[in-house]
Image 1 (tube, rainbow, N blue to C red):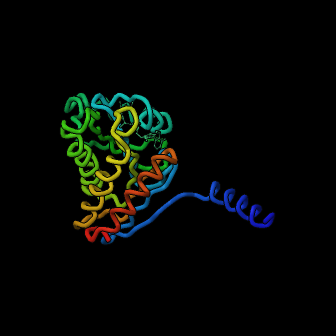
Image 2: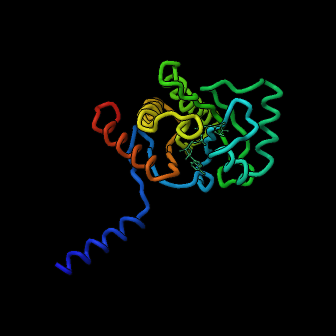
Image 3: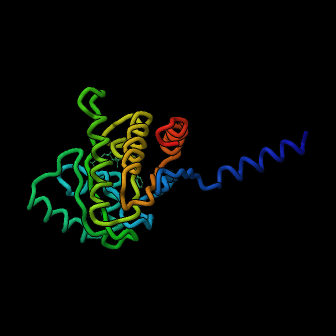
Length: 207
Ligand code: AR6
């Protein structure tokens, strides 16, 4: 009895310290989910869950501008001067400044209003426009945070399904992109994406 209690304690410690990740293959690309901080990612681009002003904010937006330095905001200002505020569901690209990632792709997810204001379409578009922009710039790897599920209030379980489906359907087409990583900040968000990914891989479309 004492022995098995000990083993349980050991395995609990191992599980707590184990890096969490799941990787699947879709067409020619890997899709990975991990728990972590997106500012530390070394993919060619990382995606920022920005707001339409592109002037920074809280959450992942704040973390990216802080880690990447002022060159990112300088380019965002030029973009807004040129084309105005960025509508939800659209994406633009800037330098990554001091980040490991060479580029930041800024997109704006929907604010959650209950689900009847085209939130799912806008969220899908935010992912797909970001991927399209990456492909147009001949990039091969990109990391995403969980867009809209922080300050914008989108329920994580619903957002995870939209996000994974949007990426999976993009990767099924011909594209330069070979690696997509979802970098999920907290364990509840990671676990929700892990469950959604397991459900989706059970479906023929991305098996
Ligand atoms: N790495 C990865 N994910 C992160 C990080 C990080 N360093 N920091 C936070 N997250 P949010 P939204 C997670 O609020 O809901 C901003 O003020 C966070 O835990 O950043 O799209 C913008 O300027 C959550 O799971 O973005 C906009 O005004 C996820 O990133 C507004 O918030 C998204 O949370 C956008 O809201």
